[in-house]
Image 1 (tube, one colour):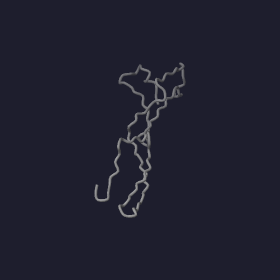
Image 2 (cartoon, rainbow, N blue to C red; image 1 turned 60 degrees about the horizontal axis):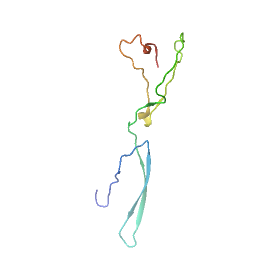
Image 3 (cartoon, rainbow, N blue to C red; image 1 turned 90 degrees about the horizontal axis):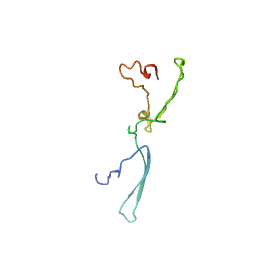
Image 4 (cartoon, one colour; image 1 turned 60 degrees about the vertical axis):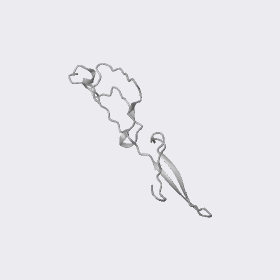
Length: 111
């Protein structure tokens, strides 16, 4: 980049889910006699991008409900995970409801 300054570049894309940290040692060596060196250890931390979708632990889910169940009682649970990190891995759950679907099963289910 400039005299006695160089840039560190990658040969390929980094993926935090595969490897989140790289430890490097950079050595500077002069052309004198005898040659003198200096080394510096550097840790490179790969920050996360939101590049993974949540995945359900089972697919498809199916369950049976007994009739005359107690309102408000739990009838089923689902679980999903996201391989991203931090806020990118936070998951919320919603039931998709179409307008005018009062007779559909989703009309009496809540999360």
